[in-house]
Length: 580
Ligand SMILES: *[C@@H]1O[C@H](CO)[C@@H](O)[C@H](O)[C@H]1NC(C)=O
Ligand SMILES: *[C@@H]1O[C@H](CO)[C@@H](O)[C@H](O)[C@H]1NC(C)=O
Ligand SMILES: *[C@@H]1O[C@H](CO)[C@@H](O)[C@H](O)[C@H]1NC(C)=O
Ligand SMILES: *[C@@H]1O[C@H](CO)[C@@H](O)[C@H](O)[C@H]1NC(C)=O
Ligand SMILES: CC(=O)N[C@H]1CO[C@H](CO)[C@@H](O)[C@@H]1O
Image (cartoon, rainbow, N blue to C red; front, side):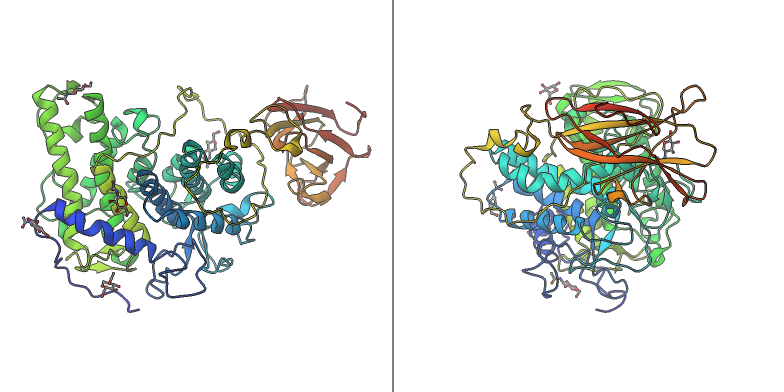
């Protein structure tokens, strides 16, 4: 592998016809993605089945690892391709991916382990599924959410096609851990998707919602466009709260971001407003010289195709003060208002914006390697491919952008009953339920739907529940105990999440509700329906080490086995009344 790949900036396939370019590049992209996934096409036995190499490049840069984020985004796209055309040979790859992720979830790593979910946010692993232990920007909290989205997309297809028991037995155990992670850690800071800045990343939060910064940058970052396209729910219209691709906020952001690159790169020189330009990650980027990225340029197109789909389906474009500047690049003098699909304005805008979107794909067509390979970046001055070759995510970005161009839309994900967001952000957290998923082979699909499927969705028999769907109970443990400043109350007990009686582990309670009159500490923990535990509270000193145990006998608790999904267990320190 050479350093900066010296490749011809002249692209043979580009002859001025976007349709023929797309028809040519689509199978190349799919094949090159599959060639970056173990084991078949990868010329290296150590790459596990279903493991996605970020790139085959081993030096300058060394991307010969598997990232949870990249793998999930790529597989979300492959699952979409499979569910649109189930005769494609992708199902085995999808199964391999789920099994590989089940294994990776269990690998102890520098971010932590599965015991308390902390290890799920480890951003990358070696290709043989061992932990990467060198310094890195970790944890990265978007990984579990994105992996859950990819797995849920496949599980939904299994459910719809009558394979409910496969969804429950093989896919749900992986999803369960990742969703547990999201409900527990969503409000913690972490490293952003570019692995450079620690803080609250919009992309991460948006990915987490689907299931502010202090970094010295302008805040213009293509992660906003990525958040918008990966949160696209065609049933949500142009909803601003979920940053849908056609929402006013997402369109205003699109314009500001794209315009910030107009003056940034020589390749964009002289290209006027309303015409596509090459897009990078963020204007201040210096990585590999700070170049445009293929996946960023493709994302700019994808957002517009998503928007066009919704406008055309709904028959109108609503222009507000917030996104007016975006639309005025195409029709100067336009006013805010609702433009129906029989108006000249609608027709003109739809046409111009489709051309604008195509322009971003044309840029990619011009600057990829002439054999159809897509690297990570292309030179800011001459469009020459730069950095890692055959970046798996670049191919995934190409396939999803051109699918949207064809009107192929993703699954809806918004809960239709979630019609409002709270006025105030409350950093609630629930300690999740984590359990190692046992990878076992998927039975080969024989085309017959599983006849016993519907009953498989009932609770597992070990929970003893007679309520279908009740598998988990959110149990709120409360203890009333006076503490002094700096002290913490922790719950320690006989299972993994409670630290196996190790007082340095266990789960800290929260003093948000603590007052002098009612000194209450509490924490919500997910237990299995019917699960029994033994536990005690400990008071941890200001130094974090000194531990004072309750003097009363061990407490015991059994979560409801029947139909409840929530329970509260109040207690007083050192007062364990049996049967309470
Ligand atoms: C581009 O090439 C394709 C065949 O690869 C051909 O069908 C198409 O007409 C060409 N377009 C132009 C503008 O030459
Ligand atoms: C589905 O995929 C198969 C195999 O790749 C292909 O031959 C067929 O044309 C595809 N069907 C459609 C409708 O795209
Ligand atoms: C305009 O939108 C409506 C839906 O609101 C749709 O039924 C109609 O077919 C659209 N007309 C055109 C010309 O696309
Ligand atoms: C395309 O060419 C580049 C540069 O020579 C090479 O690294 C890459 O493997 C080629 N891709 C394919 C699919 O042949
Ligand atoms: C990282 C993160 O999102 N932190 C937020 C947790 O919730 C509070 C609101 O109560 C925010 O202020 C933090 O920014």
